[in-house]
Length: 258
Length: 319
Image 1: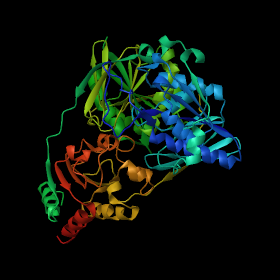
Image 2: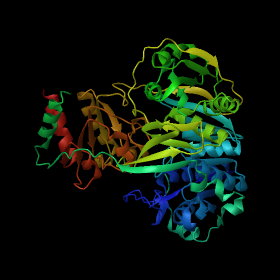
Image 3: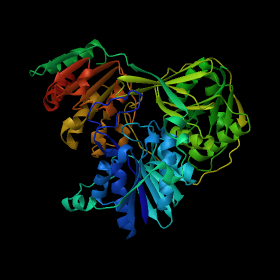
Image 4: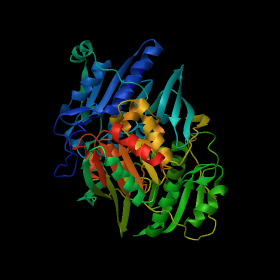
């Protein structure tokens, strides 16, 4: 069983985000594995284990040949990674990203492609489904449980009212919600092993993609303004002296919700 | 060229049109001359009166999807109409589980971008500009479509206010599906929920990692019950498995705009703020005076939730 997991390397969400002069997200600092992706990596490792063999390949797109986040996922147990890095990809939209990842995934010929439902920085939430469409594969989004049965994948898919049981044939693309599995912490052995695991670094040219069709040049959208959102009026902040609960009760009273 | 024709992707549960669909219709009416809905299902007649009353003149329906997830078949039907020259200028979809699937499949079928997470849209002659909040809603990014129509845009829930327009029932027409899709729903599970729904509760009481352990979420449930509120949660404790995903408020999860939002032990990560910052009044309780949640709080208590919450509960119980 060969599983590809799409992973994104993002600026640390704990740090305040910044925009570049061209209004793209500043990605010049250290990039880390998007925590949302650790669930897909963990699930892939578990599915390969259950299948009794196979491997997990990571596919990622990042500027400047960044591999920091990939090493984290390799340390968890993925076997290898494909990284697409190309200056022409600055300003890429979701569809461009999907085109690049789909081309990279095609090379890996997986039985199953896993991804997070959305990244923690751009959060468009459309890339996994776009990848599936580009590869002509069936897809199931918002999986909270995934099981493989021969050539079939069975998924519990989150819905507004509860969940649906959804089934389709492999190969397929499945996006998983956060919290579906408990991502393992990389062991020391895993971290050491990750340093020498293969990362295949590719450019757009290697994938046969014309740079003028992706990135800012091909995005089909243009940022015309970035404005400060109207700020909320500053509230009253008090230190609890044991009686602060009365402030809360009075506040709720004023609003007539009790 | 103004927007002559707008399509809104309509969703319904058991024949009841979702609030998100009606919100989009209210905005669509202000932008275009003709507003029609696209519907993936066999019960289009059941929604025709409601969407008509909200301004749609037609329901373009795929017919029964035979259990398929809507992404593939609905997108194939829209793409066929566009390729036949019968498409709209703009397609508006809600950020829902199925709305994102349809928008994503459609963007590939038409090779056009989909702009996501929007909270507003303006049309001025040829130019269509959508607004998306970033960095926890502190900045608004305005993006113009440059690839030619139809434009595809996804909107967050509660971006617009639903309002009836007084129209008669919409006419039902068929939209031809060219790809039935291979992912099939075999069974549906409805999780029983008691009390008000998180989406439309007047009061929401939400808990986060500051609660310390799963058992302490009981305090949130108790306070919620006393206030006839819906309990909510930050992503951190949903990820930790303390409460189900359906409790999650934030960028992933639900967008809420209640009269009062009480955040207990929630630091206020960007991902959470996006989902609750539109609340009319926000009360925050957190140990860390530097927690970002205090930047949006109307009343902020720097203190221990384990001490403050039980006292609030006791005070309310004794009334």
